[in-house]
Length: 464
Image 1: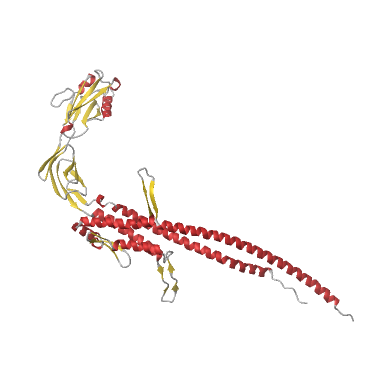
Image 2: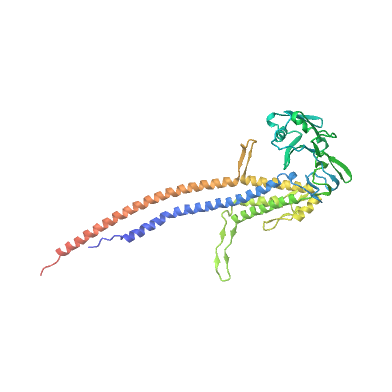
């Protein structure tokens, strides 16, 4: 009688493992696809960061007119300092016989202390400055030097007050709020305040003139100049001179592209970084073989063959190679692209071209801003807000749109993986059940066969 055969437990486990591997194959393929998509998102993140840095550098050349194009210096900063706008007239200006503008200062006689009550009763102070008068009433609660000074300063008019204390007493010091001869003042008081009377040219007991209000005077290239302040804002077009001391100084104003050049250099540097980032993420490295015959496999960037990434790189490079304005090219100002796609900037060439035609160079830089800003806005998107800070318009850049699309695809694939894994689990469970039943049936059949063999063997034996 033939025997009943059955798969052993180890064979069943091997069969289940084989089926499980086959069922896992599509899941693995989907998971590999997710890994690929995530690598693309990461690559776009790197590119987005580099383009954002470029956009920040571009903001410094947004308004070329505000970038200082003048260099100004003074031969003696202890005598005068100066600043210049882009409208400043270039040239050399000799400042001689400088005498500073001053405020008027007077001080009272020596009194007991700042907190001691003044005798003579309440009253008021009347200040006369340039034909205008200010009246300050002092109540009994403020009838001290400190109280009088506080009342004057609260008025915040043409005179300021302070109290200077010494070992032997205190004095009330009055000073005009501004400099120049027009700031000269007189004061008259009533009651206890009559002791602070002062009028130019008159003698008053207890009041002393410490400093007269005078205008600043000087000559500039031989021309006499008078100013009520120590700041000259209109003597030279576009130049502000701050007088600091008596004496002489030479102010020199020259055309200088240094600040603009530095801003363009920053754009070139960040532009290079953006191009390099795109190159890395789209690059294919071919396999190599060493002299010993050892071979290393090639590698591909996550965005190899991606049209959007490649087009972004081409647009960035074209913004330099095709840049021309008012007859001046990018190459003429030291901006160039070599055969490997690297941007270089020569500040010496920039300065030389600027010296010949500053307006054309400024126009070129403005055009560079416009071109690159259009590219970066297309990649990153734009937003603008109202005066209240509420965003009124907004556009989404293609990088954000691309990564959003990829994230949506990843979410969809993840859902597929979950569904397939559920189906796989159900199939494996059913298969395990079927194998368990089959093994049980085979085991029962084998037992039955054994008993039949014993029975049939004993019944067919012969006797002698």
